[in-house]
Amino acid sequence: MIRIKPEGGQGDSHYIMFLPFARRLALFAACIFASAALSGCANTAATDKAAPQKLNYAAEKPEKTTAGFFSPPSLSGLAGRTVTVNSVADLRLRPHEVALTFDDGPMPGKTEKVLAALDTAGVKATFFMVGQMARSYPALARKVAARGHTIGTHTQNHANLAHMSLPGAEAQIDGGIKSVSAALVPSRSRVAPFFRFPYLASTAALRRQLALRGIVMVDADIDSKDYFQSTPDQVRTRTLDRIARRGSGIILMHDIHARTATMLPALLADLKRRGYKVVRLVPGHPGGLLTASLDR
Image (cartoon, rainbow, N blue to C red; front, top):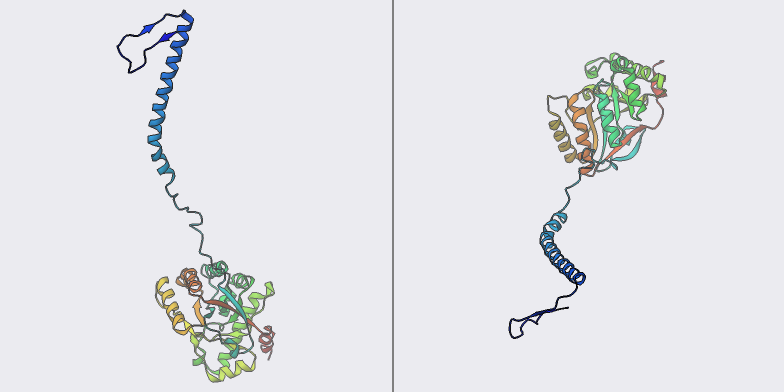
């Protein structure tokens, strides 16, 4: 037994009674354990002081994920209604509706990019093909049809029909129909009875003749003027400005220009952002009237 005089007692004297060696050894071990315990508490306190730093780090907002960073913007909902066209009167669109049309193709390296942009947006367009182009690139013409787009015609050689005789102009129109139809034969697709005048140059006599043949003349409300020497962004901005001023209409573009193919994805995204719908133009009757008229 060890007897230690209580702290605060009088005098400094204390008494120690010597115990057997084994008991003294046990008492010594107990003291060491108590000292280690106190040391451990001190270490815990030091750790506790460092804890807020770790919590602050853990509480930091995680970095924004880059998942989907390279994904194109969603254009779902851009596709509008399908417009069945039997006559020019059916081409009247509602506010905030546009129809996409592409002239002069098909053109390798350009038309494919236009098709890819349209596929991504889930919208359909009308392609007014030149006969000699379809004859030169029939597989590409069939690819346009296979993607579900409407195919009209645009003469055989992109001639200015307003400067030609009536028979000469009719020969240009019929030649274009024959060449585009021939390019589509292996795919069983047919040319729609839609026609656009090159340079938008027409005559009253030609319009009457085409109407009698059941051919719908599709003019343009919004000319992108992508045939000007412009940057892709200039073409896009110019087109958007004209769409905004008019509010709706048929947009004229060309799938033979790299600038048009380049700017098209951004144009479609802008149309979606501004609340427009892209309508699809389809014929109300098959293109048989076109080919039948060639047998005259």
